[in-house]
Structures are given as C-alpha cells and as structure tokens.
Length: 470
Image 1 (cartoon, rainbow, N blue to C red):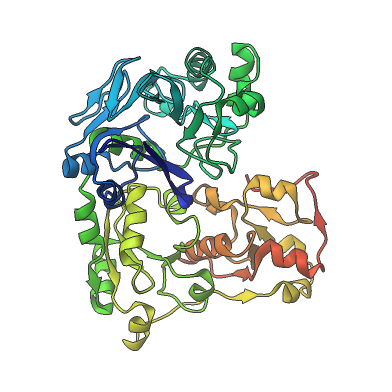
Image 2 (image 1 turned 180 degrees about the vertical axis):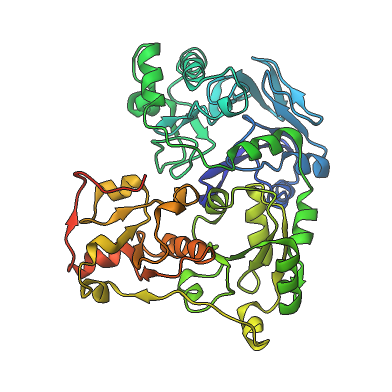
C-alpha cells in the first residue's frame, strides 16, 4: 500500500495518490493530468477511481480529463449532480482498491455534497481519512460558499450541517487514524488552518478549536465568526467543476502560442486582452509593456489572478520568463483562466529590440522614504487588514490589494502616494493595476514593510485606531 500527498504550495492544496496491488486512486486532482498518470505508471498501477470530496471553489479539478485519459471512474458522494458521467456513491458505500477498502462518508456542511473517504485495510481496520474541506488541520471548512449557488441556504444552516457531520461521522472514529485534508495554511477555504498538512485525529480532537465540546449553537457562532468575503472567482470555479471545461491539452496549446511583438500588440488591440507580466516584480518596475499588470509567477500567482481579474473568460496575453510558458498557462488553468491566447516570443528583449514603447514604475528605498516631509500621511499600505492591524507605519492608510477593484474611486489620481506591502510583491501588483487606469503618481517602496522596519526611521504602531479605506 502507498499513500502519497501531492501538495501544491501556491494553492495550499493537497491531492492524494493511493495504490494497492496494482490499483490506484487519485483524490481531488488539480487541472493537469500528467503528474498523476506518471505516478501510477511508476508503480505499474492502473488508476481505478478519481474521488472528489466536493465541487471545489478555489481550483478547477482535473477529474474529467484524467478520467478520459485513464478510464477511471469519477466518484462523488451523495446529493452531487455532476453534468458529466460519474458515480454518485451512497453514504456508507464501500469501494474496493486492491486489498484496501474505502468507505464513503457523506459529511455535508462545507457544501451539501461534501464527502470524506475513510481508508481501511483488508481486515476492515480504519487507517486514514481524506477529509476534503470538511476537516482541516486546526480548522474546519468555511460554511458560506455553497450559499452563493443555492438561494435558500445560509451559512448558519450549513454550519449546523457541518456540526452534525463532525459529531456523527468523524469524531467517533479512532484517535490513531491519519487525517489527510484538502488544504493547509494559506487557503481561503478556512480561516485558522495549520501549516501542518497531516495529523492524527486524536491530536485534532484535542487541539482543533472546532472539535472541542460545545453546543450546536456555539459551534455555528464560532465557525461563522470572522469570515472574510471569498475570492470573486470561486463561484465560476464551482460551475466549471460541475459542468465541465475545455481539455487542458487545448488550453495549453492555445496559451503557449508564441507571438511576435507585432502580433502581440495586434492581439492586445483586437481582443482587449489583459497583459499579465509574470516576471519578477523587481524586473517589472524597471521596464514593462504599457498597461500590463504585474503578477509574478513566483508568488501566490493563481490566487492573485483570481482575486484581481474578475472575469475568468477574460482573454489574457502573457509576458513570461523563457521556458516557463507552459507553467504559467497551467497555473492559470488551475483556477479556471483558460483564455490565455499566447505569449510574447522573446519576452521584453524582443519588444525593446523592435523599438516599442516601455513604461516604468518609480521606486524609492526605505532610507529615501524617511527623508520626505510629512511622509507618513502619504503612505499607502496594501497588505491585508490583519497584517496592518498587527503592525503598521503610524498614520499610513490601509487599502488591501484583495479589494482594489472595489475601492479605486477612493484614491486621488493627482496625489502622490508611496505604496508598500510586506516585501514588494503586492505593492508592484497594486501600482501596475492603477497605472494601467491612469494613476501615475504612485511610487513603490522597495523591500516593503520589512525594509521600513529595518531602516527604523519611521514610527511603527500596533493596532489602536487605524485609518482604513475599507
């Protein structure tokens, strides 16, 4: 028997590979299929099942393509209504995999169809549970997502279902079984997830706030308290997972089309495509195609694309580091952005060699920042509200990058502002988006809040009574 967690850090997502006697299954696969196929081939195993814990919101699963390529059966739990061929299992149903057994446990709460899969050995002993978004390490799944798609649901109803699922299906299980969740810290599918990606159920019973003894009403209050709005792309991803999508092979072929500078500019003009520059932010600020936005591939790329480009059908043109074209298109497809129409062949060097216009973002160091008169009231902090509240430059204003599209009107185009995040990734994204919309007086603070603190010339305050634009 083999159990392998296939963890993808930028999405904080865990898919799983389980193999026994030449039969394998995949749980909650990402969009690309080849890694799972290669893993099974390494064991000379045939993929028999693709188990889905629910209709995911934060990524597009690879279940449909993987089933077509391998002949595996897609399996959902009770109440799921997929728009493609799949097995909808019954609660308590046993699936056989080599010498192993997998019991289907319907655990509504995160969504109505949410299901856990309990792994047993050939004697029926419980070994591990794959909990999807029902139970995380340190947390449980947020109960407010399915209500976006079903009118008569509320987060309180779903939280109540989640309480029932945990207490009737999961808490009675043995303490020594291993919990394998679908996400870890950094995912927007929960609010208190640990950096650890596995644990024993017994330890979670002792340490997870949501598994402590409490009434149903107290549980509902706890898990619904402090929920931030989910990223705008979540409902679109759910619908893609329910209804289907273009083959990943088609998406890759289309998105990795090499375009000359002339063809690239023509495509931008003809399609109103958004130009996404995925290079390092430190390179971007020194020169970029006018009106392009910076979302660096080496940060939390896919979630930021989803948060900042509202329409997943938006055509995209890409500026990428050489050799990373397929990686960029794949990571876009993971969150449903399938409409990349090509990349700039030769990158920015080719654009410059063709004599085409470039733009720049002005940057200053933390040391230079401290020498500017009345600087504190001119600083714009684009970190999350929780980061700002923890510690910030005194009198700086907070406008989290997450909500930039809702609050553009609160900035004066004619006012010079100095922008920082934690280290420089998000501030460059922020300025690039606004610069493309005519805000030309925003200056990037190199190194972000970390550099400001190290410099030590500006007063830093913990949360007292923040000035915020939210």
